[in-house]
Amino acid sequence: MEKEHNPLSPQEESLRFVVRFYRKGKNDTSAAWKRVCPLLAPKENSSRLRRLYRITGAAAVVAGLAAGAFAYYWNCMRTDWITVTAGVENRKLVLPDRSELTLSAGGVLRYDRLAFGKDGRKVSLKGKAFFSVSRCEDEPFSVTAPVATVQVLGTRFQVEAAPDSAVAFVTSGRVRFRTSRQWVDLVPGQRAVGRSDGAIRTGKPENQNELAWMTGRLTYRNTPLKQVVKELEKVYRVRIEGVPQSELYLTSDFNRMEIADIIHIINQTLDTNLRIKP
Image (tube, rainbow, N blue to C red; front, side, top):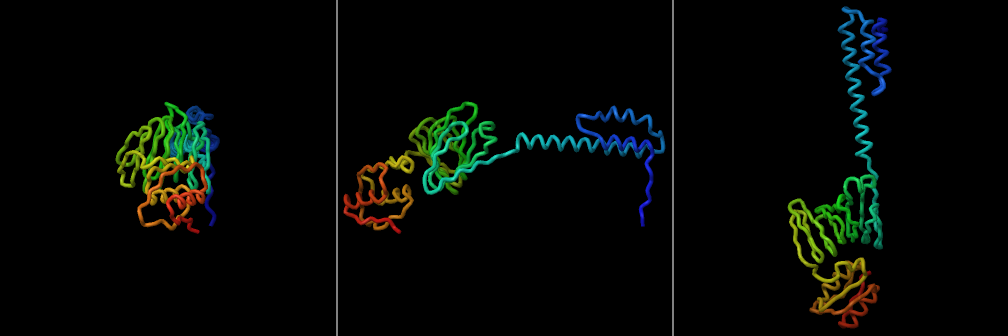
């Protein structure tokens, strides 16, 4: 059954013409309405037309809100995430503000290229990295890890980010280390460890090899062999077997040496039988 078609009056045709061709900022609806009103019948169509006019106004408001939302998205919500991953070797990187960093093997760094330097200088980190940050008083530099945030204006520091902990070590300048519960300012030579519960422990590094993964220089002064082996495994990403149960101590310096050569020197020095586990 076909629907009955009721032709529109000339007045309604005029109003629909205004609705159809309305453009925000280009058509003056008030002026258009004044031109249409004299054509309207005073009684029989007034309520119907007022209802159409309200629809016109609502449509204009919706169009304005949509345009504003789009402008906000375009200016503020656009992102262009850059993800840098280090493979089996360390990787050097220069950020848009000319800050430099070395990302440890297996590490992942992310930042929004469009927001970087406009809404602070923010990066997120998984793994370990050493940062040399260009100083900028107006744009703090921050590194976000799963359990902590490190913020600086310009300095040199190291961050190690794990799922349940974060470690920061400062070589120059001042660094603010913050967890969900507290914060602490670190000065050169200080180290902070943040845990998933928000607790922070500060102090000096346990040895002189905090940056060995990057510099390749290892220094031991009467250091327990078990501690040496543990550190070598971490720096060189290997497993070492044959560690004796007796307490042995090592004093030596290794400068950018292959792990096989280091183990050979230790075996010769301490009469041990260390070997790399296949």
